[in-house]
Amino acid sequence: MVRTDPIRMDYLLVVDYHSDAERKRIDATIERWKSKKNVRKEKGVLIRASDDDIEAFLQDLYARLDRGSESVRMYKAEACSPDVGEVSRTLRYEAEIDQETVRQFLRYILNKLNGSYEGVRDGVESYTVYTRKGQASTGFVWADHPGKTKLTIFVSGFGDVVSFVAERIDEELKAFLGGV
Image (cartoon, rainbow, N blue to C red; front, side, top):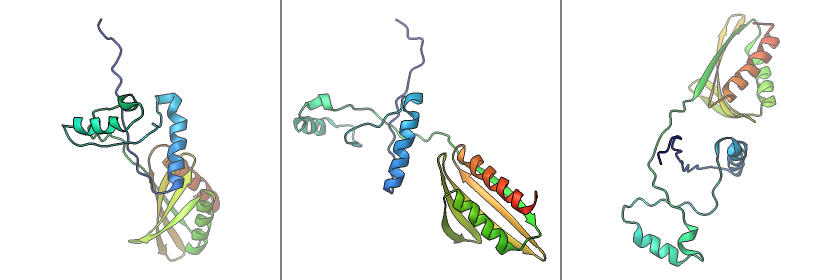
């Protein structure tokens, strides 16, 4: 019989997390996608063996399991890097309001968006914003001119979160700055 449906590829993802909160966000993502894309969180232990001759290890492993080889599913794997790129948006504002007033309002917006201050590096004030759509990195560059404040905002991340965060910041800042 000739197979006419496309061959489905299984992917095994190894996701490192650095906090319990991040692990919970991973679990929530799996829950959200499990019925849409046949995604599931495997139970058990993930073992990476980089050796063509794995039989001695498997014999030793099977000998220590209650159900022997029935407890083990094995896949051949090769590293791959899908082309999922980071998305960026840039917003620019110029206002006749002093920089400190604009900065305080921007902090208010970021607080509403669950933003976390990351620091200043090379003149860029950085925050990470956490939303239900994911997290986005934001950067702010300030330029003072006599009687004016110039602000450039960079928002970057993956997926819809970038547009969501950029649009929320843009909407609130424009209203505050008088429709700039």
